[in-house]
Length: 327
View (cartoon, rainbow, N blue to C red):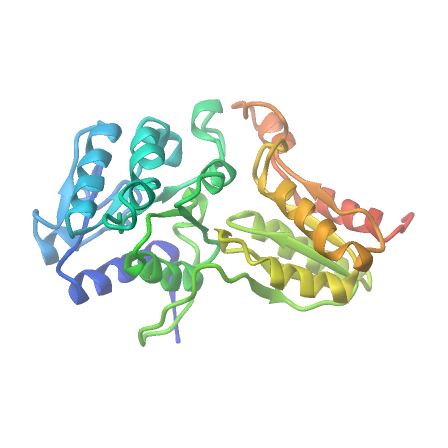
């Protein structure tokens, strides 16, 4: 085992799959000559050449359409968006073509493609560069949605996404690209559609994903100092969602708190709350609670950024509320 950065784990996943399968290629803004806006694709142009690592114009709708057409004709593209905020422009291709083609063709034409890039906020980037999109894409039948929180999961799930025969939305975070974690040297894959218990506990279940896992794990650490044992689950895949792992945890802890970087209306936590109260109502000793981003655009000022995003103190407070603790 060695420690590598998040960006390196993603790069290794793409390199290994491109060496394994000549149909796989990468395209996006600045992925080739500039080595990637976040240096995820550093060195890949030199190894694979300009036909497999392709710089595109600043025209997300256009190059996404090219990639979708390539996928429908036997290739396996990886499309990098500089941020998922810019992917609103090619949403027509993702929603109306990539996600629907298998159904519209009666199973004859698939679209094995990965759309990847950073999602959500990254500090003081303002309202138009700070939206989290997991719930939007998870609402679309025909797509698989993966949202990763650490280098190990990122590599294993990206390799699985590249091999998947369905279109996969793969969400990362700008603020995590330099973070290091344990990643094996030997090849491994992780299953899409499986949540991971990152910390075992018995008093309360905390569910999260992507960079909000830092909040969830940080809150669990603080709670442990006060004698409260929190089980922390990383969803990793948003669609298909691993209800079973969440339900099994709730059966043990009898309480559930969800932490996500989404607007509250029609969010991932909304769906989890509905499903767990439907399937596991008898196991709950308190109402399900959640902490989300503010129901507003995210502004630039540091104090408003802090007020907008979930944090450890508010998560700790919420856990104590579901445990009916007054302290």
